[in-house]
Length: 72
Image 1 (cartoon, rainbow, N blue to C red):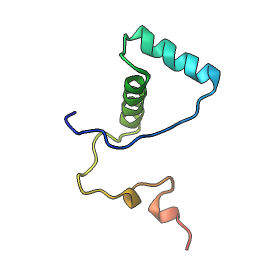
Image 2 (image 1 turned 60 degrees about the horizontal axis):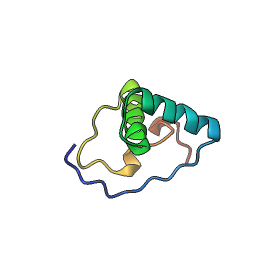
Image 3 (image 1 turned 180 degrees about the vertical axis):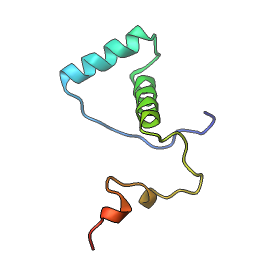
Image 4 (image 1 turned 120 degrees about the vertical axis):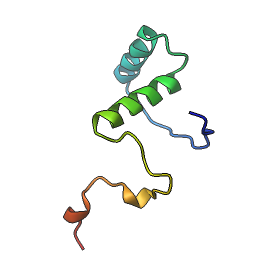
């Protein structure tokens, strides 16, 4: 990926979640927690069918609820 990283995403994890993340990261010899989180995010999105987005996609194009189920 050649795109420069310009956004910071901060998350809070419980101790056990952090241990699981670190165990997964170390077993794959990943260089950092950030790289492990990016890889897991990529895998999770791919599993859900989100492989690529259109370059001009807007955040409003993505949501938790399908457009047909939104209430006015």
